[in-house]
Length: 161
Image 1 (cartoon, rainbow, N blue to C red):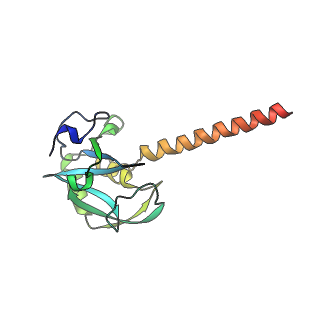
Image 2 (cartoon, rainbow, N blue to C red):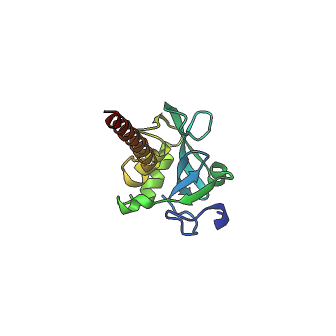
Image 3 (cartoon, rainbow, N blue to C red):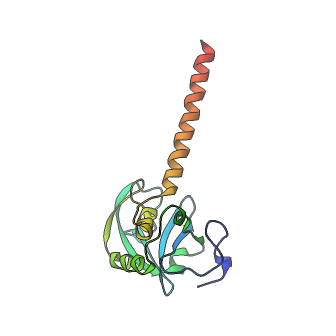
């Protein structure tokens, strides 16, 4: 597939080639794009109709499932194998992940940043559960920031009284 210099350390990356059913996390400018490895250098991933990976700027739209060469999807971005949810859920058999992923190629699906994005797509394939820790972390960050603002406002009001 390529050298380890094309990937980066962290998460589950162990300087190895992806195996069938592995989740591939690709670092883009302000978000992570996700794909599932289906063998022979190919991944299946969820994109918008113009063929661009759907990012944080799109709330809801229709998208399409594509099978493409991994290196065409990764481009010059950093990537890693990230099966970190294996600690939380038992992965489905690799052949079932790959078979289901390939069966979805060409299908149009409803995309929603919060409830069904590219990460939900791949985690549902691997674990049978559509989750996006990326969205959950962002939501906690927003709630945490809102909580800090609320506390600051309460403190300012209390200080005035």
